[in-house]
Amino acid sequence: MTKKLTVSMPDDIADRLARETNVSAFVAMAIRRQMDRERTIELLGQAGYELTVGHAEAGFGRLHDAQRQMTVDLRRQADDLLAGARRGELP
Image (tube, rainbow, N blue to C red):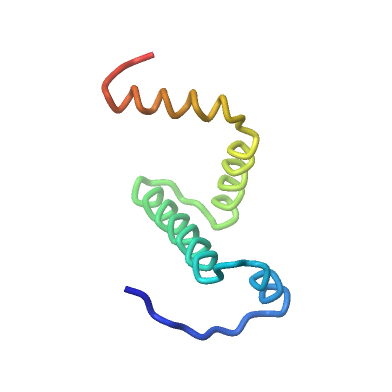
């Protein structure tokens, strides 16, 4: 199910959105990413870790940097390791 919404955006954000072929999908992805971050911070808090938004953003930034540096071959190896772990195989 979807709902149609009308929102107002600052000019710079509206200009960026104008370059997207599917603005709805782009915005939904960005909001889902934010929701994932909020949930991660909440779960870490429940586990006893106190994170500020700044700490969380720095951590997510380092994670995204590492993901960008990952080569196709390394990504394939990681996927293979995860698949093996799910099957109960240890490297």
